[in-house]
Length: 140
Image (cartoon, rainbow, N blue to C red):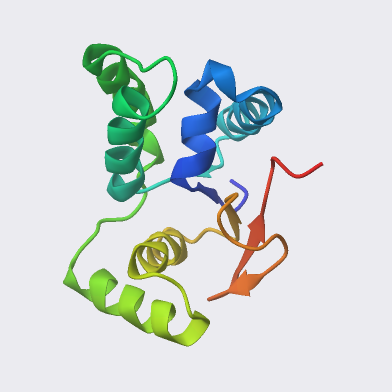
C-alpha cells in the first residue's frame, strides 16, 4: 500500500455539503480517489468536528443518524490511536510551526498514521509540517 493521505475536517465536511459548489465536487472527488486507492486516513478528532459541523453548521444539515452512518463508513480510516503522547506531540507541533493546538492535533495524528500528505484547506498549500506536505485539493 502507498503511504496514506490524511484528511482534515474541512475536506470531509465539504464532501457532504451539497451547497459548497466546486468545493463539494473537489472534496468528494478527493475522497473517492483515496477510497479507491485505500490511502485515506483521519482521526477521531476529524470525525468529532465533522459530526458537529455537518449536523449544525451547513445550510442543509444532515440528520444525526445519517451523519453517524457517514462516520461509521470512515472508521477504517482511523489508523492510529489518540493518546497522551499524541497530545504532547501536538503541543510541540503547534509551538514549532505556530499552529493552533487543534491543528497540531491533526498534524500529530497524521504523523502517527504514517501519512505523507495532509489534505486541508485550512493550512498553507505546499507547506511542510512535521514531515507532511499540505495539499489543498480545493485549490484550482
